[in-house]
Image 1 (cartoon, one colour):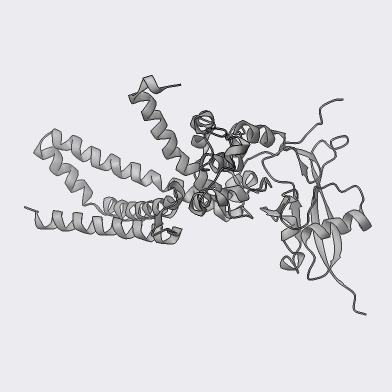
Image 2 (cartoon, each protein chain N blue to C red):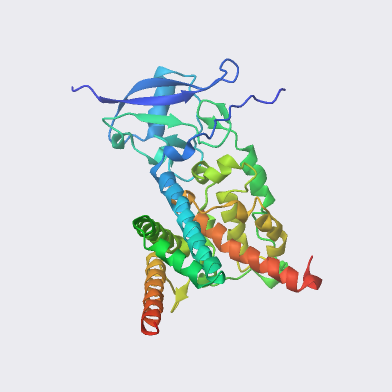
Length: 249
Length: 132
């Protein structure tokens, strides 16, 4: 039987209890054509080094847990294959711009705070009673927000956004895309409640349209579009308050 | 329990490591040539306000090889900068629908760029035919 092909997987290691700064460790991993980078990491954990720490869950690009930097590019490690890096190796880093908790695990708390700040749920304009039946919507109305609803909170877009790295207050791509997802929903009436987040310095105006967020998104959400069309909405809002101050909140 | 000690990586040299970021920096830097060219035009306006001799001096300055070289380089960067505006245009728009179908990004970019080139040609023709 021929010996299996192997690939070098270089991982960032960081143990907050013993390391002052991250270090690197390379593992030689046997692989087959159908093995993802995530499966390579699982091989390391099961057979080579049980202390390697990383997040994962669904293994099929749905849960958004296994986002990592693969050779410096933000990607879902479950949807990226080792064969595409062979015969070279693959360098695995935790998602950039986020604090490292341990090895390949980042601290998501900042994002989760921002996510809740955009009120990512339908705020009904006029709540309907059960007798009145469900909130109805045409396919065209659904098309207005559907792509933004595909976000899986994997945070690849934050790792792609230098503005978030340079100015951590920036609300960031995914949270603003989800904000737009609800604003664009015909059943929603919460627009004015979310306008403050949009208008803030750290809101849509924190974006300089680098555009890499939309490039790396594994779900085709296009956060750059959600953010930048809201610059127009924010400008309109500003002039409306300026010209019609009696309508100000 | 103590808060976990995390490690924050520095951002120094962030734009050098990724071709996408390098292109972004070139896009942003190309705007400098727009500002420089605006300065050249403003200088011309200022010299015009000082009288004919001053204005003719400014025009003679434009005819030097250095000035011509600057204009060639500035034109290339400004044309590139203008193109990048059209390239990001779809990102700044809500979905455009024609006959119930969403217009794709490529069509929006092409339409914008073609409209800009046509406007330039009209402007150039107007200046050409109304020259003294």
